[in-house]
Amino acid sequence: MIHPYLLLDLPSKLKEETSDCHAALEDRMRPYLETAVDAPGYARLLKLFFGFYAPLEQAIETHLSAQHLNDLPQRRKASLILEDLNHLGESKEGIALCMQLPVMTTAAEAWGALYVLEGSTLGGRSISRMIRAHFPGAPLRFFEGYGKDTGPYWLRFQEALRQFGRSNDPAPLIRTANETFQCFDLWIQTIR
Image (cartoon, rainbow, N blue to C red; front, side, top):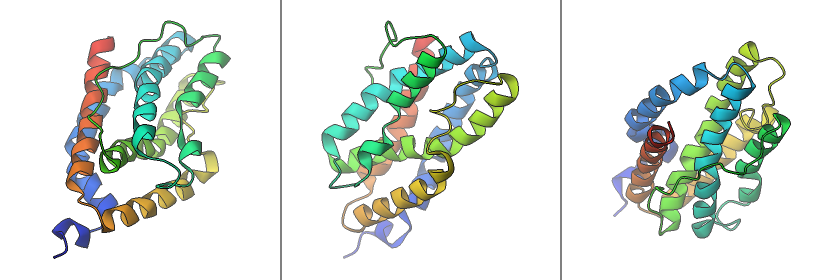
């Protein structure tokens, strides 16, 4: 018997099932975005992201490899955050790293966490426009995502996700995507 979720488009199902946690995270993030109008405020925002992305990317790569997603190494974004921080004259020294990450013991759970990071590249484009309007000249490597290739990268990710979902139970993937949003939300509250 085919699992009922497999009859649906998995990326669409993930978006639907994570919408509440996603919205809560956006609300929590708003004060950081509103104060990213100069170098200190923007550096604070970047450090917040680095503290979550760096350990999460490592955890994801423990369970996913280029066999699962052939361009996985190009999808790492923590190094882009460091480039932006370096441009602002900041280093990674002393940046707190999140220790409360979503539980990941399988590839399905890693896909769920990666869904959140990859989806953030779409929102990052909007954030970069907002930052550029208030802080001209801000380094935006991280928030620009894949630049003009952001759309194609997202489409390739969705197709790989669909392929994975055709033969795997989506429940752990959905659970971990929600946990990823929730862990980032808790991280923001912790780091204040």
